[in-house]
Image (cartoon, rainbow, N blue to C red; front, side, top):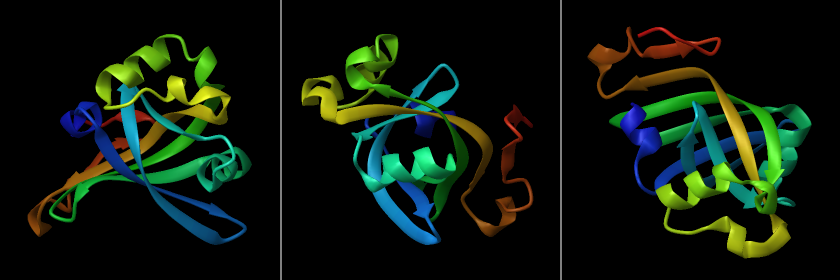
Length: 136
């Protein structure tokens, strides 16, 4: 599970909502100091929805090897002010959002629940984190 979070170019589906309207988008994530970091345009629906409601659901992997992560927005940081966050993001991914100017933000997300499974027999033990605490 941590391998998916820390993999080079960790692609993730990000689901947010605004006034009951769901929004789903693929982004690239980084794992930094027990947090998931996304980079996106500060005017994107993802950034706006996270600022408004503070929560999202992320999905790493395919349908037969999935990691679902419920997250809470800890903070949003302009990419120019990212410091070590920006360094870690750029080192893990195939692009550096700091080169995009002031249009981008790093969204620092705190995992609250993590579930992982491959097949039906793993459904019972799928919860790996609850209320921000590791169960394994």
